[in-house]
Amino acid sequence: MLFASLEHEHEQANIPNNSENLTQAYRLIALSEIRRQRQRQRQPTALGSVWNQAGTWEEKNLNSWASNRIKELLGSLGSLEFPTGKASIDGVSKCTGDAFLVTVRNKKRVGYNYELSLKFKGEWLIKEEDRKVKGHLDIPEFSFGELEDLQVAIRFSDDKSLASDDKKQICKDLKAFLSPIREKLHAFEEELKDR
Image 1: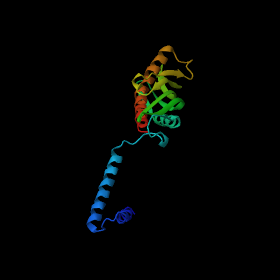
Image 2 (image 1 turned 180 degrees about the horizontal axis):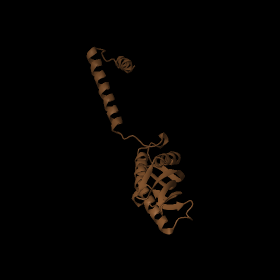
Image 3 (image 1 turned 180 degrees about the vertical axis):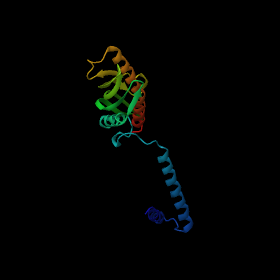
Image 4 (image 1 turned 90 degrees about the vertical axis):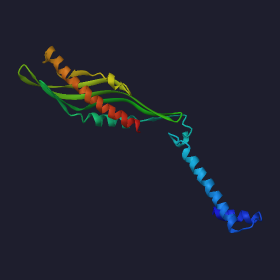
C-alpha cells in the first residue's frame, strides 16, 4: 500500500518511474520506519492506567489481594518446639489494614499498613503435667519496610490456671514465632513490589 502510493506520487510529479528511483525511495522509507521504531523503543513505557500516560498520580487499592496473601503465607507457618513444650499457628483470626500501589511521576511505589492476630495452640510441661494452652499472637501494627521493629503481644484464651512464671516462660517461647513471621512478611513485601 505504501509503495503503491509512492508510485502514484512519482506519476503525479512527472518523475520518471524507473527502477533506480523506486529502489532509492523504498530504502528511504525503510530507513525512516526503522528510525521511528527505534524512537518508540527508547521512550519509557508509562506505568499505570491508559488514561494516565503522563504518570502524574494514580493509586490502586490492593487490599483484597494483600489480605488474602498475608493469610495464606502466615497460615503455613507450621509449629515450633521448645525445651518444655511445642506450639503451632492455628490460623489467622484478624488481618485488617490497607495495601496500595501508587504511581507518581511515572514511578511505582507500594505500601501497606496492617494489624494481625494469629491463633495458636500448644502443649507445655508445667509441674510435671502436660498442659494444653491456646491463645492469640497479636501484632498491633506493621508497615512496609519496618519488619525489623515487629512486636508481638500474647493473649491467652484461658490463663486462670497458669502461674505467673509459667505465663512468662510460655510468652518467651511463643516470641520465637517472630522470626518465621518476619520471613513470611518479607516474602509478602517482595511480591507486593512486583505487582
